[in-house]
Image (cartoon, rainbow, N blue to C red; front, side):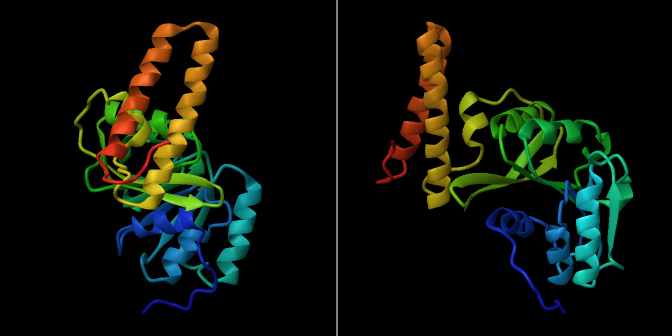
Length: 238
């Protein structure tokens, strides 16, 4: 039976929690306050969890919260870089959230054992999501589910990922939008609009520097994004 929850997750972590499979061994990388594993333990989603962080401060905060919410016997805390102190048999579902996409890719690359089809990665990049999506597809990972979620003034993406071994060179559009579609939710539409603004700024930089080929390449992505909105029956693009 789920225990009483004494706090609510922020929208980013709530979306990540919803991608965690019930009954699986859970690992949270870069845990900070350990709110995500504590919530999964208290809600009855996971029977046990490991939380890691590179720095001592977050581990101390996580330890405090583990005792505060009385999960200290089910939550193991380890200070390490990424998955360096986690054994393959200790992890089924692994969350790497709240950091840049390139750092997330590095953590995955340094743990070859995550390339097992029964494992799931729950990834929430704060920046450079396009670089993470490119890395995943080039290295045989498939995005099973992806959800956009607004948290404050920004819209983020959360992905559930599995290793399949199928490598491919992703399109530029996929790198920026992934499996998101503006017709699926208002947050997905807002995420793509956010990407449009980001790409427009990049395009303007190329235009100022006279880099015509790069400017045209960005223009192709922006036009495809416009088409996505047009295909979504009534959702206006910017």
